[in-house]
Image 1 (cartoon, one colour):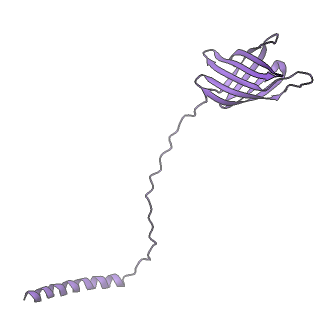
Image 2 (cartoon, rainbow, N blue to C red; image 1 turned 45 degrees about the vertical axis):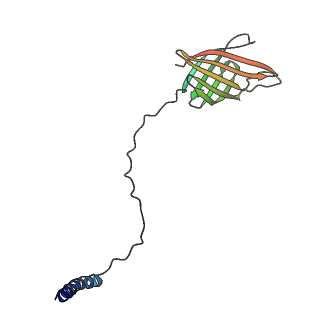
Image 3 (cartoon, rainbow, N blue to C red; image 1 turned 90 degrees about the vertical axis):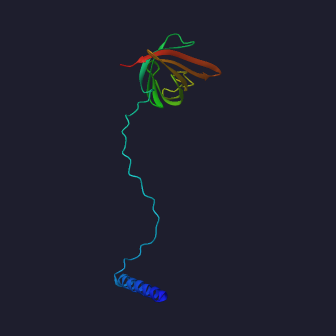
Length: 164
């Protein structure tokens, strides 16, 4: 009798499963999508608006500069825009382009390429390329400029105030 009861339970289970399988086979089947593994993407981060930082070496300064061996000081101005800048020597009708090569604390170092009024070796008038060191001071900038010509060092220095 135990065997008959077990067979009856097995047949009953089989009959209850067959209609479910038959219904599943006759129902329209969705097309199989290719199996892909996707990593859920993180929700987009909201953009944080940062205040535009102004490079501390941006601005215009001018003043009188002395050159060793030159009789009188001359007018000079520098306009900086981050890592680049322009120089002007109005008394000598020269102008130059600056490229910042380094900065540390209150110091910045530039190379200068004369773009207008370059030295004419025949007349010995004009300006030479050089290097410029600027130091920020409470009143503006302290500058020193150096180059060499015909084996001699040329040095200029001065204090520059912010242009108004």
